[in-house]
Length: 224
Image (cartoon, rainbow, N blue to C red; front, side, top):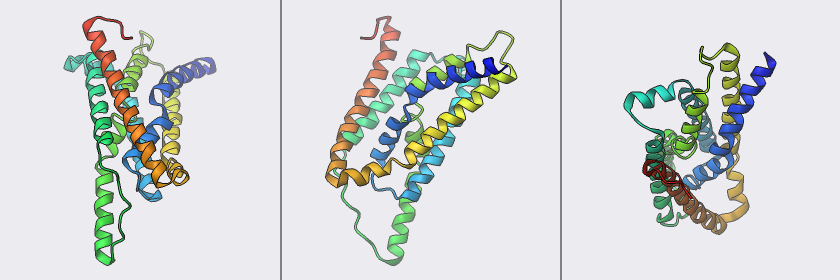
């Protein structure tokens, strides 16, 4: 039983870890929230980790059935997800340089902080979780892992291994996002602006690459 548990755990964890890339996902979210406070970043990290856990569990459990029900293929999923990621990168790349927020007094400051909190809360699922953390590649891998269950159905040891692997993976997501802000203090404002532009270009390239994978599969051509 232990051998089956460890094998299933390692298969799921090692398959999803390089695709999700928690440090890279944390830097992407940091690029969208360069001025978030530690408390706000902590809330975002918790929400994204929880959302990622639910999404990956659903993808492993019933993802293949859901795509089949709606007639969506994996190449189409990759193409659409790549377009969304590329659009996010393009928006970040062309966004005006963010200036330091001026301090407000009294009720105005509280109102501005409350509005910023509401804006962050509205983005914890899209785009912070989907597609920046759990993108089409991670969903495709999770669905593929879920369809490799034994013909008689997954056993309790496989369900337990999958649950443990996802919990450990999402804990890494939380830790990386929670403490990504320390990089901001090390780089300073100018260095942060340079890193954000480079990161935006990387996000754009990742989106184009994922979309190209999907388009190549639809056209029946090997992706370079």
